[in-house]
Image (tube, rainbow, N blue to C red; front, side):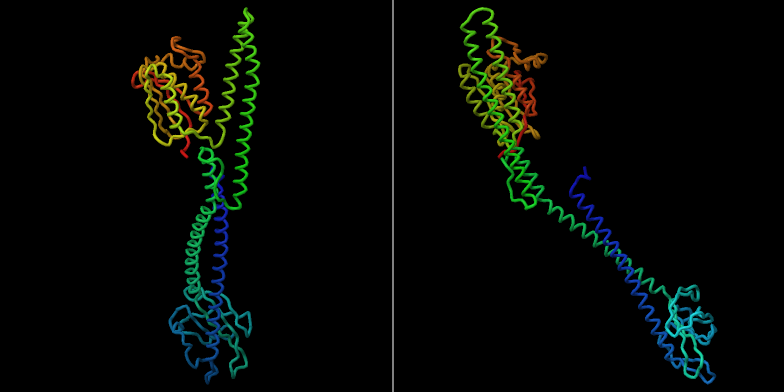
Amino acid sequence: MATRSLALRLIVGAGVWIAAALLAGGFALSNLFQDTVERNFDARLEVLLESLVAVSELDTQGQPQLSRGLGEPRFDQPYSGWYWEIAEGGKPLLRSRSLWDQELSMSDETATTEAYRHDVVGPDNQPLRLVEREITLPGLTHRLRFGVAGETSETEAAVTSFNKTLFWSLGLLGVGLLVALLIQIRFGLQPLRRIRQAIIAVRTGRAQRLEGDFPVEIEPLSNELNVLIEHNAAVLERARTQVSNLAHALKTPLSVLTNESNAAEGPLAETVKRQTASMRRQIDHYLARARTAAAARVLGVRTDVGAVVEDLRRTLERIHVERRIRIETRLPGGLAFRGERQDLEEMLGNLADNACKWAKSQVVIAARREGNHIQFLVDDDGPGVPAEQRDALFHRGKRLDESVPGSGHGLAIVREIAELYGGSVSLGVAPSGGLRAMLSLPATDAA
């Protein structure tokens, strides 16, 4: 699932490009710095070489000597890493005290009056950068080779220090860029989270359409979703209308057949009467199923539970006024059923009416929110039903006592409608010893 995340794709893609860019930039900067350091080191050696030539002269014996020092103390320290030498034909004539009894690996193959730079190995295997040049001193007819060398460990240390600083700097820059990227992605994807919340509001019944001010890139999506929601509602409404029209169209012929069979006598009339009654029940049953199935899929449908239960309480108390049945309701505020009001009335009405028929004096209707569902409890203080007989009550036409009025279809209808909404219904024992009906239905947030 993580590979399907849009945010993850953006982060990984940008992270790869950031890493590649920082690596390429780091290598370029490191090479540029190293080249600059080496050029400066060569330039320094050339300046010292020119200074060596400037202070060189011939003595009375015709041998080169220095008129004064070069101003670099390390030329006087043995094996300091800084050396100079004057040679002729590969034979040293004069050298710095730092060389002691050693000599520089002067080139004797390249004769040039321009500065010639190359790497050599000095005393104690020191890596040296040597700059040499052939010069003709006044009073001489041949050239002498002047050379100045410096230990390259200084440049290597400078480059190493720079690379460490560059590594940590680019690393911190990369982390900073990734943090900025995360903030940007979170801010940039905020409209998608808002549209998700808007869709949840529609699905749970708190809104009829997507509401909100969305960016221009998201607005076409929200508009198309609103059109889809409206189209879905229109299609379901047309389906309901056609179902209703079919019901009315069939009821008239059935009524004619029923009237004719009632007016006639004989086996044929009785058969027609039974079959028309069966047809009427089947039509009412399947038309109700079709209407409920459509309602269960309508986005944005919600019903206030408190209002429905209160209306049922008043109606049932009037119906059972002669038996003085008291109906008590225990409901928290803000409960809402994700479905049609008439379906909730059908289910609770059947359960509550059945409880009133069997109750001695009291019926309790309670409800509570459990996660994404509402748990309804309908208790009576009647004789109850043995556990082995409870499942049989959900079969159509099944009645345990013919003395109590009813068709035996109520609990079956409740189960069918509840299952269409993804709910359930079961029977148990009430605290008073009577029957408890437990109905679970999908909940939605209150408006």
